[in-house]
Image (tube, rainbow, N blue to C red):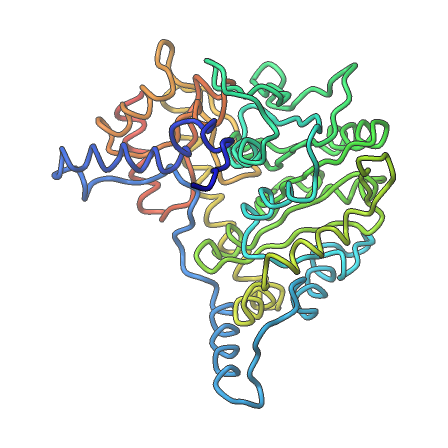
Length: 411
């Protein structure tokens, strides 16, 4: 009988979003009359159609596959040059990122987990709390943690609390060396952004301590304030200490199409078991070449169209649409006299529960009374207790109705 990976057994009962789905199904099964009235503002999935420029590009690419002369089979595992070069030109002008430092994939969620393949055991790993659950669970699966304690924290991880007391910005450890640091900005779940000064301080720390920052910038397109950094590579010295993850999922509606990319500078290094320096870039290239056959040709053509003249206009319309939803949700929560965070540079609104109500009780209240699905903050970590997240990814009609229900049931 083959032995299983025992680290999987350390995982908590269920990944957050399937658990939410289970509870919602249980509720609608017992209250079928509420099913049609239910509005889902929990999982961060987009609702609006794919931009026309992207759809047209995908159609044209499909047609290319219809003749022997223009057919495309296996593509380069790193991604087609046309897409990588478009990303450099439009996302990183003047920053010094080269096209061959960009790796195209089928999702940033996949990449933030798969990146652990090239890092060995014994690293000191820091995560923010609350946190996107994938960062934690993939480290558990990889054997980088001990067991989970009663607070829901895993032994071996350093948790950096993000609360209203520190404006949801993690404090840099004063006298502790961290090897891998997970940062996500604009943040999921709190919706808060990071200032240039704060990000510079983290880069300074990472360079001083030979750390690597795993920087998830999946929501950078939603940043509204011009003085905020959109990429960690805008910070001097970040090429020496950072990997950045980006996605087409939320800005261009690719959640079901699947396309993302990871930037790994060629001069970024780690160390071997014997203490020798080794470049990270070729290790990730080898990993991708071995385990991944690349995102499909039509999808990459669709992603390239995001940077076309029409594509840029249509994507901006999409992000503006969702940010208008976020503004409406913020206002509704404020009208209900709740403490509200996020929703200014992010499509997520982070809300403090009413006094005496924990986050899962808040989930039940919103589900049963308002017929609205939100995400309980406790699902994102111990520091998320006492909060809930509302996603602005929905139709304007639904968001306006959610706002009315928030004011009616919580005001």
